[in-house]
Amino acid sequence: MRKQDIVDEIYQQTGLPKKDIQLVVNLFLDSVRNALLREERIELRGFGVFDVKQRKGRVGRNPKTKEIIHIPPRKVISFKPSKLVKELKEDE
Image 1: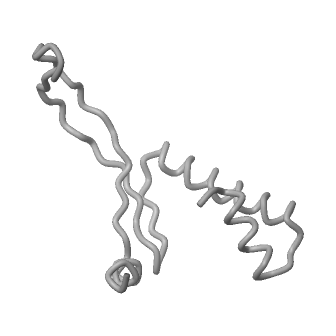
Image 2 (image 1 turned 90 degrees about the vertical axis):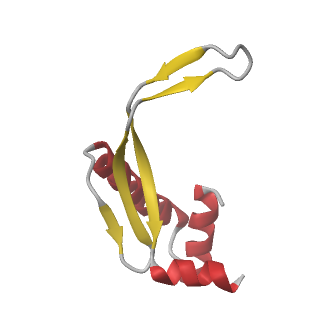
Image 3 (image 1 turned 60 degrees about the horizontal axis):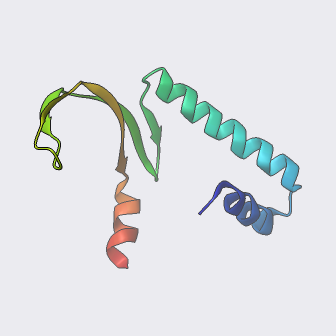
C-alpha cells in the first residue's frame, strides 16, 4: 500500500477533498518522522508502538571474501503491534 492508496481509501470513506486528505496524511507522517528523529516513543492505541532502539556494534564477515569487518553500533526503528493488530494477523 502506498501513501496515495491511503488517501484514496480515506476519500472513498469520507468524500472529503483529496487535497485536504493528502495534507493531513503528509502532516501525520511528518510528525511521526520528526518524533522518531527526536528518538521519542510513538504509541498509537489499537495499532502499535514505534520506538528507536540502539543496536550494539558487532563483528561480521563478508560472505564473499571471508574478511572480518567491524559493524558499528546504530539506531534502528522498531515496531511492536498492538494486541488487536496481532489478532488480525492470526485470523488470516
